[in-house]
Length: 111
Length: 117
Image (cartoon, rainbow over all chains, first blue to last red):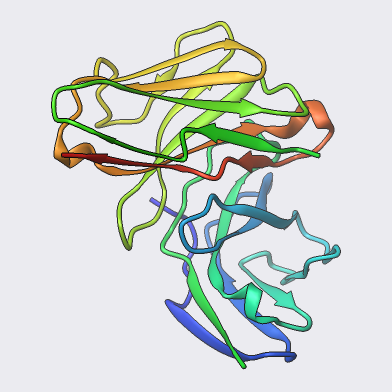
């Protein structure tokens, strides 16, 4: 079973920031928070990951609470192409670790 | 970089036949590859973990004799659905460990849609 809970769906206006929350209250000390997204009928795309510090890359920012029990993925300026299902996954570090996908959040960016 | 391809992108077959799906890491080597299955309106479910040169590790409930996985090289893994039936119709997705490319993540293929008539 997935170790994370996310809202089923969210809406965002184009050009505005999209803030996607994730709860992972049972995260272990050596587990990372990974975010992937899946655009309809495509394979998932890696977005970002982090351990305890906030992270930022060209796609998004990841804010992890100090107690690491929750996190927020931020898309600073959402576009229509960001409409997708976003998955928050807790796992060990590295690409050889198993990923357990929950139901994710369906983000719809509206014009 | 870090591109994973799958072939074919879609396939239609008759019940009882076998179908082979290829997963290739195009610009990096992948010691570990994963196979997932996704039914309509559902999330991805891990089927098996494939390590180059060794037998695949299957998740509980996945029939290893039905879903044959071969990972003979560091850039290629194959999934063969043997004696396919309509209930095997699904979206099959592979991913590859990007560690050889100095990343801490998996890279996913575009998926293969299998329809069994």
